[in-house]
Length: 408
Image 1 (cartoon, rainbow, N blue to C red):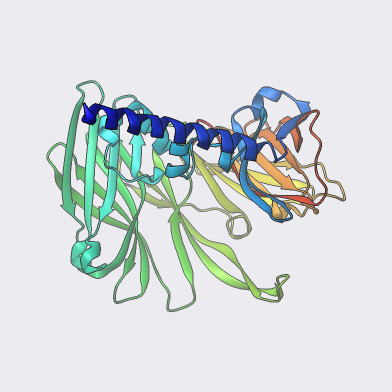
Image 2 (image 1 turned 180 degrees about the vertical axis):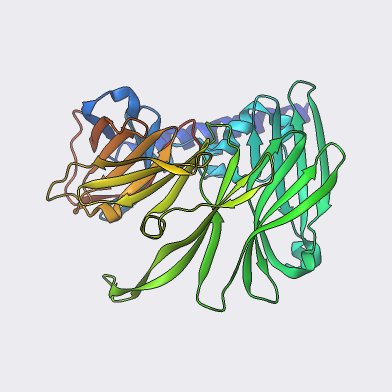
């Protein structure tokens, strides 16, 4: 009988503790103002999937918040379990965890490690033995693939080829196609101080490494260089990975603290065909490549973005035709309160451009959504207090990121 009383008492304490947690969270949240993305013009449905990551400050009160069209949510308003998990709560990994709980069990939470189409879910991560440190012999792929139709899962481990050459290996992208898995990585070389972009081809059914291709290799001896794959659109079944080789150069002007600043400059671009394994250099005019930033690969289109005098210039390049197919400027209406466009958050996804422009006194912000194909502005909005909400004096909002639900 004592055993049952202990269980009853434990359950009572747990229920009471959870209840107290939510009551305290609600009381604390009531002390913070409610913000929303409010329509200025256009179709307000365009703003429904976006949310802004931000930081609220008012005297000694500081809190992370997320702002959407329907209102805002503060960190302390999130459930106990969501706060334990932390991070992006509408990430691609979270999406997969809800749909495929058994398959996702025990796997790392990093969107780059996963792939999904109508037939398969793929996973590849780098495993190391932390007890011995990051020794070259530790690097190995942890691979898993779920066949949705057969409901079969294949899991295995493969050593990274020539692993003794590297001090670090990062998985950048995973792709499953034609019975094989392609794993795109960035590798840091141990002896030559170089950075390499690799494409590993794995036969996941036979649990075998088929090939290891080095797409790019840059040395740090002649100045600091970067090489990485351009962001891609998960809403499209992509065939191409575009690699960007960029240099870091010092800018003559110093920042507000007097420190020397640097800027990235594109040196070379190459497209890798995931179906054929063909690699080809993208032959754009030097000025276009150098001044514009490669921002997104969507299907067979590579989009570049560049700040223009009155807005944001978007250049679309067809990877299959090998030519520029559109060059547009999305006008961003300006006012004296708006910060420089250099402080803006720009996101390209799902054939849309999303822009968040903070104001100079960190009280509000401007939202713009445009159609990448037509060049039309679809929505303009602003971050402001929810209707009927009174704002305290001295508050500040820092805009940190812009995310679009469903695009991951």
